[in-house]
Image (cartoon, rainbow, N blue to C red; front, side):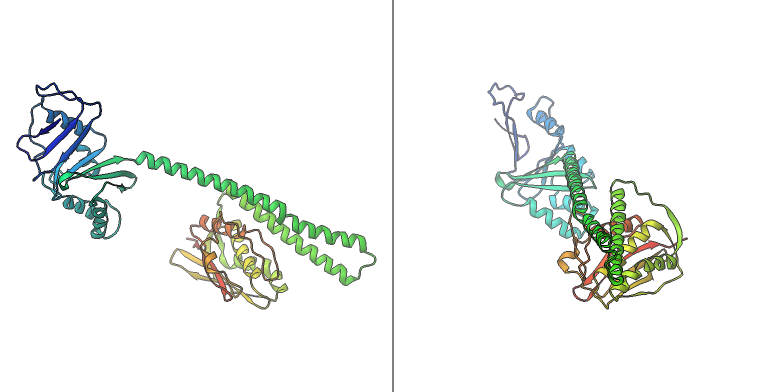
Length: 415
């Protein structure tokens, strides 16, 4: 059935069961509305008879849950519904027959509905989507969490019909599913990591410790003092390594389960750094590495255990990846009036640029031996990243292969 709206150049085509003005023509069960522009926009808001086909069509369009708009070949608005106006929160003065879509889209771009950026560039990007010669589908995010699927269809004569479907609930569901997938991936990674540590990283120092203890037990009377001293040093080294592994593993596991509580206290930065340096001095001396510091008298608000674990892991890593005879420097400098930065710089082997981006990611299992073959679990930097975040900061890494690396983080000054 084809009906021309009186006093309008637009033709409305309708197939379906609708009230007829005296006709008894049969109609199909499908329903389709298409507005075809022939010359100029019609006045959408003019009064029509309640028993007319146009009235019935208008009621359908006005009560659709999706927004719709139709533009003629010159890009002028000639049909729309209230849902479209509500979606974009458009003022009444814009919603008149003859308003161009450039006018409407410019208003939205300048208001910031299309996001941050140059309104002209944002407008051009939207126009490119809607001005093709075949149907186009795109997604549009408005005012934060409102998402819409925009479908534009060309009509005969150069007109365009555009519909807006609210897909916010769908996007929320997709985000929730992604979060669940990420959490599952994280859980699987944690499980694999724990198995790896238990199966290899914890067994290795245990085997070393037990092996040398067995040598002492079997050869106590025949071994020289030098040999016994060497055995004892290896036992001590393996014991220290085992203690560090267990400590890191326990801290990391507790943090993953949410059992780690931040206990803030005001502490002397000088005392905290000196304490960590003394703990690492023996390991540095064994490799002939010089430990340097430029201590300040600042007091900081920190969790003592987290801060010590964070700094100890960074200094330990610096020693591990520095060649014998090198140096490790622990520096301190103010960031602003409220925070101070602690940095650990070495002149070691450095890190390749393609590894820097994933260095602190928990999903990437990285464990690299040191310059003398010192093993690692890959847990240290993960712990550092999480403990730095607990202090309101993050780990920053700068590195050049064969030149060295700098790891830094900041903590709040005591008030």
